[in-house]
Amino acid sequence: MSKPMGAIPAGFKADADDMLLIGDRRADALVAEAGDTPLFVYDLALIDAKIARFKAAFGDVDLHFAMKANPYPPLLKHVRSRVDGLDLASGGELRIALEAGIDSARMSFAGPGKRDADLKAAIEAGVTLNCESEGEVERALATARRPRLAVRVNPDFEIKGSGMRMGGGAKPFGVDAARVPDLVRRILASHAEWRGFHIFAGSQALDPAALI
Image 1 (cartoon, rainbow, N blue to C red):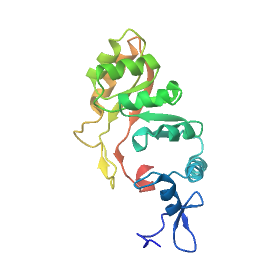
Image 2: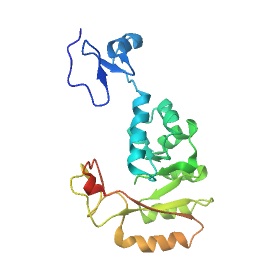
Image 3: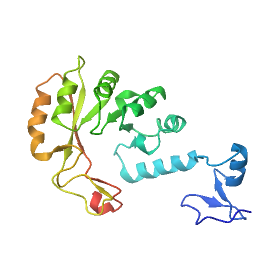
């Protein structure tokens, strides 16, 4: 028997031999079936339980899955009917999502590094763009189609305890709050479809009071 490498992760269990079980199957049996390591194994029942727990706690709040967390196509096909949308961060993620049959109207695309080809593909697919700068808005408006645009705001506050802070000063993400009103007026006066604001002040914040 292999020596245990650490505590059994939350949500999982072990058998009488302290062997990790994933979907009620022993980890060593899954390795034998695959023929070697490393391998990735997903317990879809555990994923469904986590989604259900979120929705029970947050009521009418929409849940969007960030593809950067895991772009594995079979996983996307499983969660697409269980979440309210997808958050994209690259043109490659957009392509994978479309190939997986995800409804593009339920996608939003954030990130300061969008290339012209990424913008064009997203606009043609009907994806909401979370625009990170005035220049990105102008590039989107220069396309022949009517883009769906939101403005990502770099807020003038920060969330204490975040692993990565994305507000409260100069940051590569979003438009500084003071410049947002003029940019919104520009979008409203154009042929674009206004979608609202994207505000994400920090990631890896596990303090509920800070998030609220």
